[in-house]
Image 1 (spheres, rainbow, N blue to C red):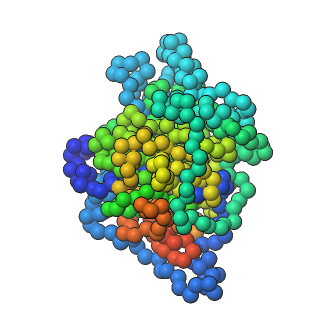
Image 2: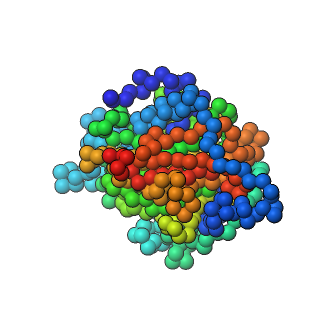
Image 3: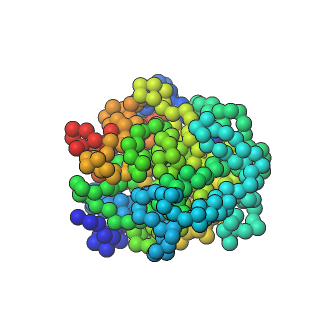
Length: 476
């Protein structure tokens, strides 16, 4: 049956509906190479601690699961593909999932595309060629897209805020963290690295207005339609002021241009009406947005349930970047391999208790930037829910379930080195303290296609394995 938001009254009863949200890092711009699975690491440290917390399924109630299933259904209505509302009948407006056909459009459209590119691509003091074909422009900090916003014009980026307490961690790090840095080139002080948007990027979208934004539309969840599928854990029922996790990085296969595979943190507040606020961060493979199948560090935000506000990365005015080492939207390197070396990225998002802005940290302590508080309504105060996990889009373009992979493409039961993981999950409280998760709920809405298994120990804290191959004998 077709889903409509007005047929889902449970959603309004949820305290902080789960929906794509964000995570931010506490880290330098480096991937973390993990040295072994959590059980092995714990055993090696028994001389420091005689106790190892046993793995256990996360506590959940039937009501919580029901609420979450409602969210997952709604997330399908509210979630990715790219769109903002264009005027009905606009020359820019094309059917969803139909790319531009330049030969069938006027030269005027090409002119509008070029005008958009001039607006979004700011003048560069230096340009770096990435091995994956990206061009990374070093843009003067005060010229970045954020400062096109009326409330930010003429301002300067803020100084770093106070980090949450309990944020110290010492880990072995890999040398590389994004592919564009492999050349040894970097952006000078006073600039930020920005992935250049190209005409091809826009032509893959359904319209200029929709480029870089998620779509809100009705979808079918029966055997004939497309939908968003998840394997996630979440907490709700309290006030949250941030979230942190380390996310294993893989290159899952995405088998259709209009599908994606992502692993991220969501910070959420509001209802599933028109006032949903989210901040989201993690990694994603999205051929539609980026034109390739590399896993890329990304962010997203919205304050009206993905209708007209917010965007991916720096594709609109909003997020203020403050460092010159991370290009949001750029490919992550190195990546994990099956039965091989494992790499993860740290992500932390938290609310500055002094000014109220939401900051993003990546790796082992590198501040990326912040979302100004004025962008939001509900998140101006706090989050109602924090969610961690994986999501894919299943278009069923072949008539069967997609073979797009989540995580490593392997089920959770395979464990370390084979299945993808999140580790050291934490939330930030009202007093700016990082705390372990309590009352954790776990949901895989299509467990024969993608599943999840949660545990806890002294080394990885709260963690989970998740993912799967998509179509298989149990997932036709």
